[in-house]
Image 1 (cartoon, one colour):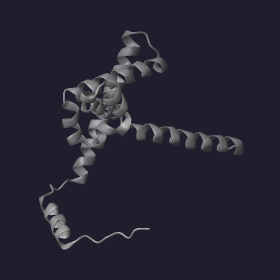
Image 2 (cartoon, one colour; image 1 turned 90 degrees about the vertical axis):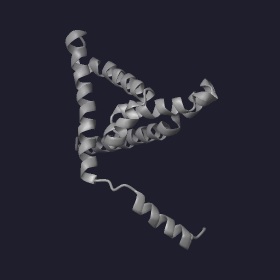
Image 3 (cartoon, one colour; image 1 turned 45 degrees about the vertical axis):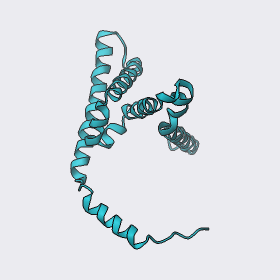
Image 4 (tube, helix red, strand yellow; image 1 turned 90 degrees about the horizontal axis):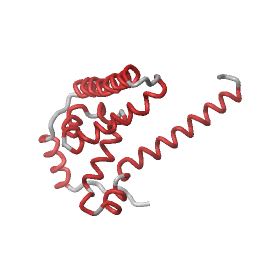
Amino acid sequence: MAKKQRPTKAQQEYQEFVKTKEPKRSILKNCIWAFFVGGSICALGQIIMTIFIKYFNFNEKTASSPMVAVLIIISSLLTSLGVYDHLAQYAGAGTIVPITGFANTMTSAAIEHRSEGYVLGVGGNMFKLSGSVIVFGVFSAFVVAIIKILLMMLGVI
């Protein structure tokens, strides 16, 4: 097993220099921005869902799928126009947590690799960022399902 090497004096000086130039970030301000932007995205989703229910005769259960599709389309469009990235600079995790963040990673990867062609560029690289999210989501769902089955077998739920 390789030992971790200590940074050289020049590397330490560079790290100290970088710390002096790095902008200070307010954690409280970032959390507030993330809360309000993420909440606004979710509120927009609720408004879209209400529109589907009121004007297109969907019920609450069937309106969720088209609402998610509309949010994905809006996020992809804003990503392709460069707006979503500017919003993410201020909102941070507020733009990443909802489904729109997933659409943003897919669209930005597709845009970045489009010069390599549709199959190898877009298709091959689109899931590099979001692939780990998919794997983690599937694994988490599996673990939660196992826990639920065990709790049901024990008679807890």
